[in-house]
Amino acid sequence: MDQVAPVPFSIADFRARAAAQAKLQPGDEFGDHRFNPGHPRLKHIKPLRDAAVLIPVIDHADGATVLLTKRAERLRSHSGQVAFPGGTIDPTDPGPEATALRETFEEIGLDRDHVEIIGRMPDYISGSGYRIVPVLAVVRPGFLLTLNADEVDAAFEVPLRFLMDPVNHARDSRMWNDLEWFFYEMPYGGQRIWGVTAGIIRTLYERLYA
Image (cartoon, rainbow, N blue to C red; front, top):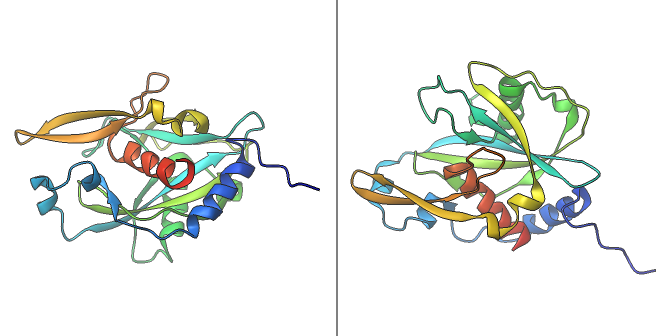
């Protein structure tokens, strides 16, 4: 009997694609420099600080979604920006996966009993000086979130189908010390997904769906 292909943008399809990309060579280093080759800003970001984020893909029957957060306006850096839950890797963390799970629970109260780690993406180098490990995860529905008001103003879901459609990947730029800095932008539901978060989403598209 012929094997039936998973429904596009279902969790089964996402799992299969994640497993396939894990076998690929990392290739060139991923990060903001790919959109800004030779930019002077990139000369000031070493040594890099190690961080990890969780890419939480929620298993809905009518199509998977991705859980994102809006950082608190009161934060000193990247305030109000849309982000994946995550943060700096502590010396006591056993690995990036532990960091991503810990930070996710601290930020939005997503219990790890609802989270299944299924792999990683290649490291992403941000223009702000971080080497970020994107950790892929499947999230079982039925969870309750408790937002840490000191860190997060909101949490929301975006259909995976929307994020993995390159039609929704706009290029934009802003000035940095009188020089133009380019990035991706993916507006959805009144939220502006841009910068590093959009760059990681674009990498996810290129690795899994392109």
